[in-house]
Length: 230
Length: 307
Picture 1 (spheres, chains in turn blue, red):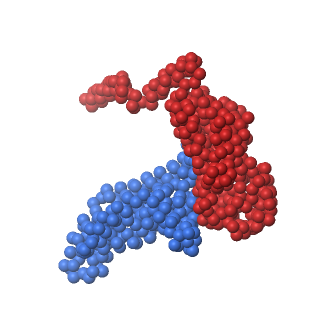
Picture 2: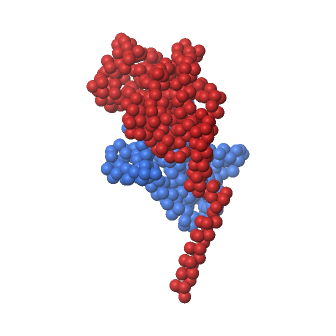
Picture 3: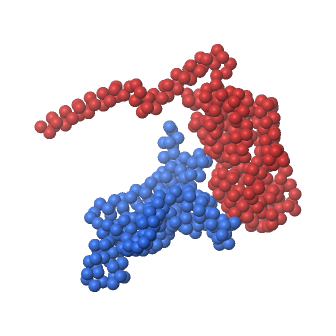
């Protein structure tokens, strides 16, 4: 049991020593997940609103696929991206394997369905009323889109935060396409996995605490947003 | 009035707690409380002890073997362990991690027996009372592998390892390091030290992963890396990497087996661990080890040398 207590004591020492490596790993984690979330948000919001406002043939299939992709296992996404960008793969000439760019690509694929799924849900529930009001006031198609976006901004913020939380906490995809290279593609989750395999509990616990802290902040943002009337 | 209510509530809570604690006996307790589980295993161990004083060897059902990724990745364990289970009835649960973690597991009493390859650390482990005794089992060797193009021109150096490391450093060719404090990583660091160099910069890739992953990375980046021969050979048909440096005695890699000190906790299966060691060092098993890999790779992957 003592090693757990020692682990926590060591963890606080590490965090308070402002070790540059630790903080650059935290920085890279946030950077990768933030960038992925930003790209995913652009695609996911547009796709979600369009899908929610328009009826067309085959929409059911698209919606069903989108919902399935919301639960994609990160490891599978990592594998999928790795197959494409590895040296033998069709995009091998781009030399993306084991770069932060590859990590952003993988996380974007992971997060986009989540954001678009949540935005689609919100649009389906409230969007049609909003767009009908807009139409009756003589708004154009473009006005409708913009109005729906602004009216649903809380749900959209929840979707974005959820996506970010998913990205920063996953290990499978970034381990495969990033490779956990020291000072280059090492992020919080791969750092924890690696230190556990080396028996460095202090380092793992320290990073685990930071990760939990980020998760708590992310979730309290979601809670604040959903706690009020949408 | 309020105070009366709160006092009553307190009394009720205490009664509830008492009832809860005493009432949680029997089957429920065995499920919920780990202490109860420990007690049951203790009694099993006691019984086993009593029996082992009568019989020569008691086969308790399973042992936890903490070992390095190389024994697992190369397929050696899958090849020899069924024989052990067949002979003794003991199932071996293999936990394949780096040597650093394997030794840590031994210190924490999480494993019954260790099969690792970092002799100085192993001797310290036994000297500090974490393990019973260390025995030589077998050795294999490390090789430097890299792309066929050989940008650092290692082939010209021959078998000597230290000049090869200097060449890799000078040519700034990419080199993937395990970076996970494993036996292989410790060996690699000692070689850089021997060459009087401190590798750093973009060309030195510290991966923090197991041997198989690191070889895959080196293949992907067309970089150099140091691997144990066994893991490299077991993957070589899928790789664009060649062995460029081999045969320097410095690269020999001795494996040892240690039973974890049974005084650490009651759950350690020392009888099983001793049976495992006895079997591993027996002439028959040693013979089996020397035959492993010959059919598939044309050469043995491990050379047995139990005394």
